[in-house]
Length: 509
Image 1: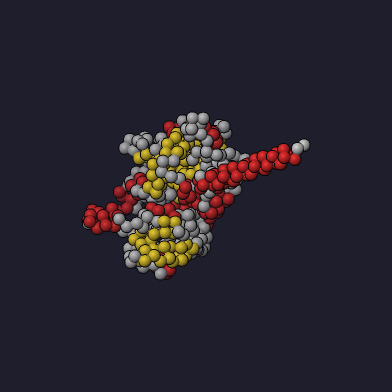
Image 2 (image 1 turned 90 degrees about the vertical axis):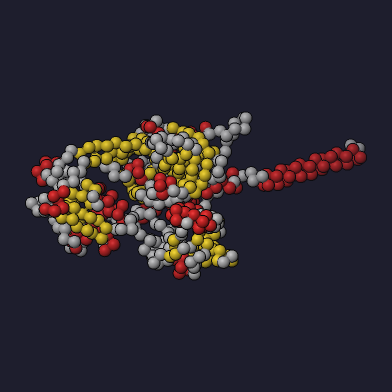
């Protein structure tokens, strides 16, 4: 071969190789700049360490993730996310035995007792739930299963299971159920923090008992407060415009990758049906609550121990001051609780909290959203604005009693120090009562013995709620343990005796 030709061929090959290398390098740089280097690097796919810990407690496979899909025309494609989600969402059926209660005015004055019988009435309710582990843990709403005597769930493949209520939390309206089995389809936790206003989401549930229903919409707001009149303990909901109706409660809010980013909880409506807006508890909060209920039996709430001004109340009395407060970008520390973690760390009245662990805080809802993902004893960095200067404090969060201890849910029977036996309907009729359970035995060091309740005492109501089973007592004690006023008011009597009302302080156990 001619030497000149060989050199030309060599030069051409070398130029081709160099061109290819430059092209590949340029492509990678462009991809990095566009944020599309790999699925795992996408911000929407990265969840916080806390949420990852909650997911790990249910042994979720972090690799089970779909990519964002689009049609050939460039429109969002929800088909794969919907197909994955419907198998992980269940239909929840509850059965509640309720009894009409008649108030006897002579009961309070003459001690004749509550001896007005009524027929028990069965009520059936429906809702949705989301399987979050292959061994059958299910998140739903507390109001779906509250006071239920029986709970059953039906999967998308029509298999039906009896469900155990592992724990409930009224403040967040979240409950955790468990069904027996293995290898159930489940939804993995997504990054609810990364959701953006305008992003597409799917609501999956069973509205009006129309099972496996999927609706689509966008995130229309985040950190929405004052939902349901502010009656719930969290004020940081995801607001969506996907159609959500009665029966959707406890169902899944998923992103276009089929990841669980929220639990559908409430709707804004004057008719009871969908009127344009619905609200979901972010999975960053719901996942933590579910993990707490599984591990501890009760929710671990971490507090700074501060109070902030109620702008709505101030607005009614001083609109100008309310307008001034609403301009503050952060949370004004108005006062402290009796035992305050924030005060102990050096935070002062008048400080404005602007960040928690470097996450910006612009409102009380955002502050609460951040604190809801921690437990007592966790340490956080709190950034405040003090007279125009930024300062940071390390705060060890506490529980509502000012302690850093983790609390564990207790069985009502061990808490009260008693055992119980159900009363047959024939004996209830003979006693003239509509509800009741008999104390079978008491322990010498239990709360019942301490307050004078002994064997043979018949309990009709606790905290004005009828009791007919040990499950009823467990539920009432668990709910009362989560309140600030931890007192049980027991109404009952000994056979042939007068009705007694006995107060039991659970903090004395």
